[in-house]
Figure (tube, each protein chain N blue to C red):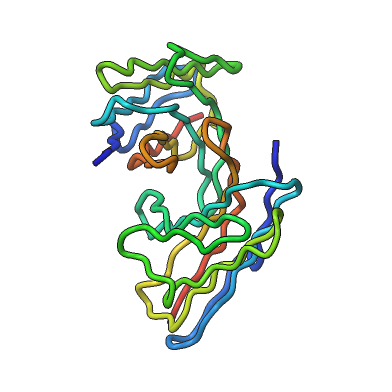
Length: 111
Length: 113
């Protein structure tokens, strides 16, 4: 059974710092992995999608890497801003084409 | 990309009643999904809704409690039946297929008293 874990559960950093969010999964047989952002009380916004054959994806200040064999993904946020404050979720697609979500990392960027 | 809307955005309901949540996608999609996010928790898949067939429910979720309709390729409804306070959650629908990006609606925030 696929399980997805995210570390840390919460993170508070001063504006301008570079930071790394971690996601680990127990079954390496995945189709893809996505990183999402969720603002309080809101739905989810997809940030980056990495296919199983890819090693990383970049969008603006965001870079996501995937090491399928070790069951790990990282989301790197460069030069963090207060507007980056949100909960970040990773989700893996495996098995029967359904996404399994991680527990999330609550990020707060202080001005 | 797909734009997904949900109605209602939030509601407060009395225990024992039912609420139907609507999900509209701006393009035709094969698969739609319904998720629940309980307070402080991550998302849990309730069921997958395909047009023209019965919804497929995940372990712990049953059709009598969460009946789903999928009348066409752009619309789906989820009903939360005979509600109790434990059903207080955010309910989200999404669309996507296989390796494509999965798009999420804004969610319906439900409080059951």
